[in-house]
Amino acid sequence: MNGQWQLRFLGVGNASAVELGSAAAVLEYDAAPMLLIDCGQEALTAYVTQYARMPDAVFITHAHFDHIGGCERLFYQALFDPARCGKVRLYCAAALVPILQSRLGDYPSPLAEGGANFWDAFQLVPVGRGFWHRGHWFDVFPVRHHLPNTAFGLALTGAFLWTGDTRPIADQIALLDDGKMLIAHDCGLLGNPSHTGLEDLLRDYSPATRRRMVLYHYASTADAEQLAAAGLRVAQRGEVMPLNAPIPALQACTRAWSN
Image (cartoon, rainbow, N blue to C red; front, side, top):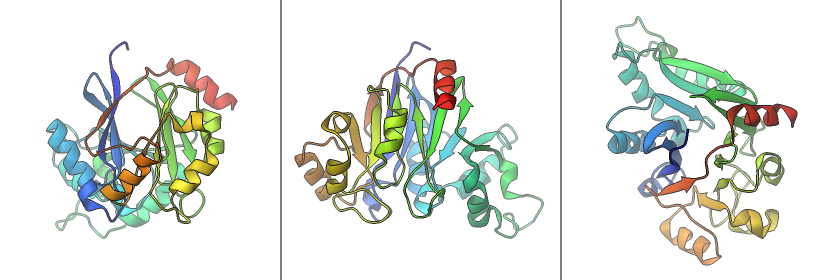
């Protein structure tokens, strides 16, 4: 693939910042969507507005509703479309499957008339250290958000790394970073036990790493302005950022399994 890779930020806000959109992005190749990262209600609406169709593939970072709230709507759309039913790929870490089942799949009879299970609409793909999608290897790694093994990040080596909601994860980034990737990192003005703040970011990451970061999941435009004033790049809702081409897929997969 020799075309243009880019990352489109559908939303950049935290769970309370509805006006900024729920944090989510789309990996694009030649302006066409390849993979949606998280599926909150606002994110799904933004996706349909941008592409005039529902997503074919989604990666779920964790099971908070600002990241999965659109899955119910996606279920109904796919279930009643014979061309899409059972074909919408939903990638998630295997450890998340029981959590997603309890939050989405256990609802009694998703159709009032019966006859359908929640997962009938999807091709659920539980993953470990990563997964193949459209000929590319994507790394999946645990992050620091609430309890261990309940939230995960995503990386396409050479192109980008998406932390999802997290505290600083300098060790994971050092393991996956090739020195050229765009690093999309959770960061608000003030940190807390589940999210990174400005002070955390400045303390835990080197200037060289911060120069390749773009921040999202902040609380307000005022907070974004203060993050930018500290010399950091801040993503805006709807912004599209060019990416380097990913390294060859087999090389990326071999690298992941040798670490």
